[in-house]
Amino acid sequence: MTQLSLKDYFSLISLKEKYKPSKLYLYDYQEVIDDLLYILLQEDEDIKDFRIPTNYREKRHLLRGLLNRREPRPLPQEFLTKMDSLLQAELKNKKIVKINELDAVSELVPATSFSKAHKFVLWQGDITVLETDAIVNAANNQMLGCFQPFHACIDNAIHSAAGPQLREDCAVIMSTQGSLEDTGKAKITRAYNLPSQFVLHTVGPIVPNGTKLTKQQNEQLASCYISCLELANKMDDIKTIAFCAISTGVFGFPKTEAAKIAVNTINNWLESHQNHFDKVIFNVFSNEDYNEYLKVFQQS
Image 1 (cartoon, rainbow, N blue to C red):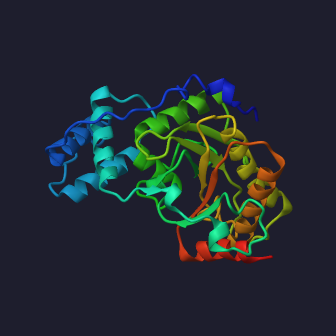
Image 2: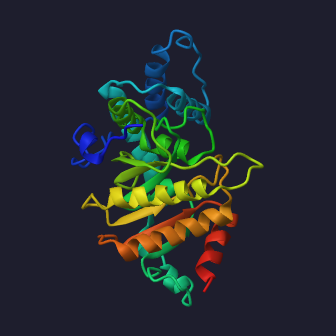
Image 3: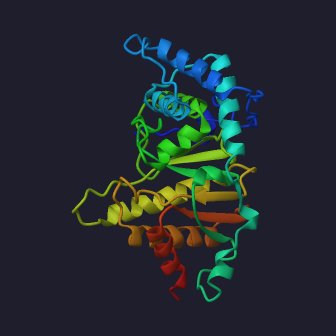
């Protein structure tokens, strides 16, 4: 399938312009969410008369669900301003993680054999609170985010924290491309309300449950990491990048093999390419994932 290059969509989604979220003083969170819900409910004849809950948590839950399932199309500026303000207020209440405060793998595992361990960071936590130049999103081949409300995938988490503008940018790219995204390829957007500046979206291979891992699937996963590195290396502003454990969630790629591919591929790429990366973060969410990466770094 024909795949767009960076230059084909760079100006279409204003990648050169740093996004500055709108900020209102939220004196009444309930009222703001009521306004946002009203706008979304009025878009759909089937749910426009839906009764808005009275409980704040239920309201916020409903707002996320409606945005998760919503097809990409422009929203009023009033909505975007209030949504930005809500997400920024929520972000302020979270503990933002600054990568310069995290130890390098060379300190965590002094005897590691990886030549770029001084640039590597192994960190367990929520990627949406990581303050870095770019984060990597494990997307599907539609590249529009997860449409299943509240689904526990990283695609859903990133889109929900970034705001609806992220899906809009993805839609512009995909409608211009006119075809699904190939496995192993990547695209880049701004990160909007995330503490990072950019999001790299890549499509990893799917390994159906009970099937044997193939050479092609290994190569496709390695290609995800290479595509993201090459794309990020074209952006002067990206010197730090955080990778999630691509394809190891609902896509079913075995965690042990995935960790080996991730670390070896990135280390080899950094060794053989001129680049401006200062830090590469391996972001994991579970203890199991953390231990798999740790084993890789401990191998001599």
